[in-house]
Image (cartoon, rainbow over all chains, first blue to last red; front, side, top):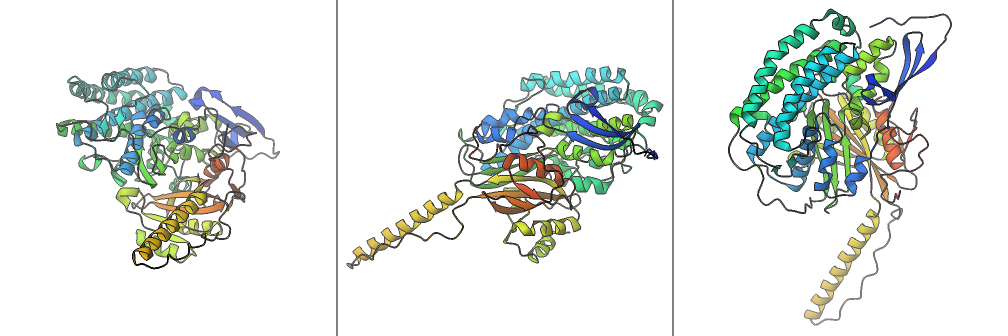
Length: 372
Length: 191
C-alpha cells in the first residue's frame, strides 16, 4: 500500500468526486478529504437514484414486483429474478420442474459472463485503456443476442416466473450458447495477453488497495471482493440452491486481497461460468418449463422467508414477510454492493487518489443496486 | 461451529425467545428475539463466533395489537357461545357471558421490529436477531462499535423507519435526501 505522506502542517482540503464522474459508474458521490495527493478520509454519499423498491413491493402483488428485481442490478438481472422467484416459491411452496431450473441456471450464468465482461471493459477503461472495452462489448453483444431471443429483452429481463420460466428455449439457443463459449474460450487468452499481462495494468493493481478478510467480515463483503481476500465463500456452493449441487465447478479464491486479486477472481469466474453452462446444457432434461397449478393469486402463509443467491457482485438476499394476503407485508432487499462499498471508506485511507479509483473499480459497483 | 453451539451461547443471555425454524421452509437456522438492551450482547456473541453481518432492517407492525385483540375477542366469544350451547343441550341455565378480556399493560402501542441478519463464511448457519421497540419511542443501541458495517445499515433503517440507534456516530440520512423528515416504510406514511 502507498505510504502515508506525513506533513508537518496539517493542511487538508476537500474534493468532491461525482455525483457525475466516469469512475463512479453511475450517480455516486464521494466526499474526499485530501492531504496533497493522499486520501485522509472518504465518505461515499448515496441515494441519488434511490427509488424505494422496498415500498413499491408493499404496494403491488407478488407477481407485479417481478420487473423491479431486474431493474436493481441491470447487469445481472437474471440472478435478481432468480432470488425473487426462489423466495416466493419457498414461501408459497411451489415446486419447479427440473428443466426450468436448468434453463434458469444456463441463462443466469450467461448473464453473469456478460456482467463480468462489461465490468472488465469498464474497469480497464477507468485505468486508461480504451481498446479492451470494445473487445468486451463485442463478446457481450453475443450473449445479449442469445438472451434476447429467449427472454425478449436485452438488459432488464423478467424471464422467470413463479414455478418456472416464461417460455422454453428455442432450437437455436443451445447451438448459439455452445458457439459463444467456443468463441470466448478462444478470446480469453487474448484478453490475458492484452490486459492481464500488461505491465501498466499490473503496476496499477498489484499490491495496491488491500482489503483484509477481517474487514470483509466486519462489513459483510461477499462475492469477488471477499474471494479476492482469500475468503472461500460462494452462495452457489455454500448454500446450494436450484441445480448447482449437481454441477461441477470451482470457486476461484485469491488470498492476496489487492485489486489484482479481485481482477483475477472475476476473470477466472468467466471460465467457471462457461463450465457451468456447458454441463447444464449437456444434462438439460426434457419436460415442462412451468409448474402446473400455480395459483393465479398467490397468498403465501404468514411468516418470514429468506433466500439468497450468488450474483455477479456477491450474495443477494431477499427477506419477505407475508401476512397471508396477495401483497408482501415487508420486502427487504439485501444488496451485495451496498456492503461491498461500505468498506471503501476504511480501505482507501492513506491511498493515492488514482489508486483509490482503481480500488473502487475493482469493487464492481452498480449504483441502482446500492440505492435501490 | 454449529447451530447448537450458538443456541447455547444465546441461551446464556436473557433472550426472550430462541426458535429454530425449519431451514428448508424459512431459509434461516436460528431466530433469536432479545430485549433492546441485549442486542449488543447478542451481536457480540455472534462476532466472537466469526459471523459476518448481512443486513439490518425493520418491520412496522402497525395494527398488530388491534388484530390480536380482535382475534382474542372472537375466540372468547366463540368459546362462550359453545359453552352456552353445551349448557342448553344439557338442559341447564346458560352460564353468564364472560367479561371482555382485560387489556394487558402497555399493549396499546404497536411495535417496530428491528431485524439483524448474520451469516457465516465457513459453515452454513444463518442467524436472525430480532428486537421490538414501541412505535412512539423507537430506540435501540447501535452495534456499529462491534460491526463497523452496521453503520450504513442502521442509517438506512433510520431513514425508512425513524428508529434511533443510540450511540451511532453519524445518524444522518443515507438514501433519503439530507433534509428528509419522513419515514416511508412506516405503514401510516402517506406521501
